[in-house]
Length: 79
Image (cartoon, rainbow, N blue to C red; front, side, top):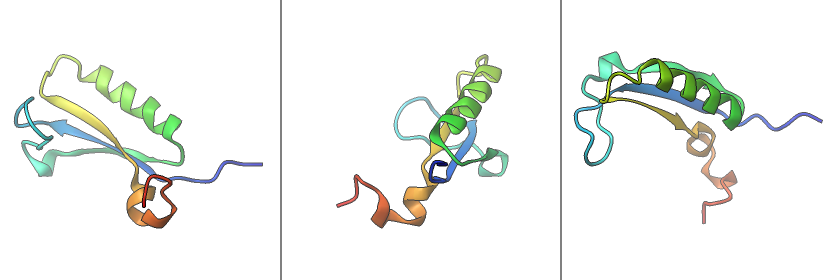
């Protein structure tokens, strides 16, 4: 039996600051790494990109649980 597909996006880019909520320095330069069917796949991609950019302290990558945005009623944390 295969796992249910849950859409996860991995994006990253240079932040304006390390303090406060994440804010990209230039939205035109946001790196869309890819879309992944499982959290584990997304984390592997996130980890690889984070390691590639470790020398830039302002560079950050994120895993976005896009399936929660597309269908919030199926989110177990949604009330």
